[in-house]
Image 1: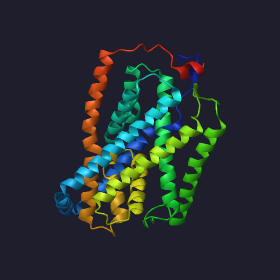
Image 2: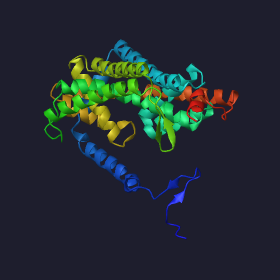
Image 3: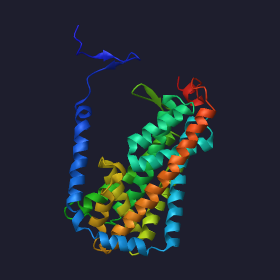
Image 4: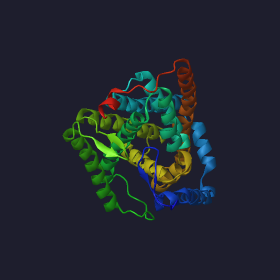
Amino acid sequence: MNHDATTLSAAGHPVGRPSLWRRCRRWVLPLLGVAVLGLLLSHAHKVDWAGAWDALQRYPAMLLLGVWAIATASHALYGCFDLIGRRHTRHRVPRWRTWAIAVTSYAFNLNLGSLVGGIAMRARLYARAGLDEATVAQVVGVSLATNWLGYGLLAGGLFAAGIITPPRQASIGADALRVLGVLMMLLAAAYVVACAFSRGRQWQVRGRRLRLPSAQLAIVQLTLSTANWALMGCAMYLLLGRQVPYATTLSVLLAASIVGVITPIPAGLGVLEAVYLALLSGSVRQGALMGAVLAYRALYYLLPLVGGLVLYLLLERCAASHPLHTGADTPWRAQTR
């Protein structure tokens, strides 16, 4: 018998050799991250760090407090994404606990990467709360879709409107960026249409049954996600001292966010700074620009991580004090059988 041939998984499904991409991505993505990080470090000596430090010291306390409040509101709003998943799957984890799991995961996601925060931590905390893997996958899928659908709608509109002009060294031109923006908006609209006309339909994806939410929930997804991205842009707009129009500030933030996702560097270290320097260096003094980005990192990334750690400890303590029976089906799980 050839032991290199296709084998069977524990569930009885055939499992072949890993695809070429799965084998290569283990070293391709880290190498890409190292290359990007090296490029950023090579330009670090050109940054006006003294000006950035001076800009940080000049921020009024009330302004920083206001931006921190906006950042907190954004994180709290993101927690509602998992509540949409709760409504969709109708699982029985309490609303407050569902919201706390999402907020905790988001804080870790921003600082440690999506595999640690967005997926692994969610899976652990929901499993401790008594959810089965299929329901957890559906909740995570709804949350991710919520985040990026709102991104697509908002970024698509701004890119299509030509709010920002790509730098000369970018691989995409202004016209191509406009076309991309239109496609992003069409995808968001197509999602709502698909939800409206696929009521009750299910799809089999890698042995799991999935179904789209209702059109009403899809609209809620787009509304909450768009509002969340708009809050993030508002925080940076205030830190830049309103020197740059809000639409431009938000467009640059959205561009930096997608570059940060593509580049496998935790918290997008250096990526956010590089994108802002590339797109706004002609509009804002470099020291003030870097000061704003560093303040944004501290208020939107680092401080919420402290709150996320506290929430994580509370969730673990709650799971230890109130163990749930994990074998029980959720209503959604029972319906998909």
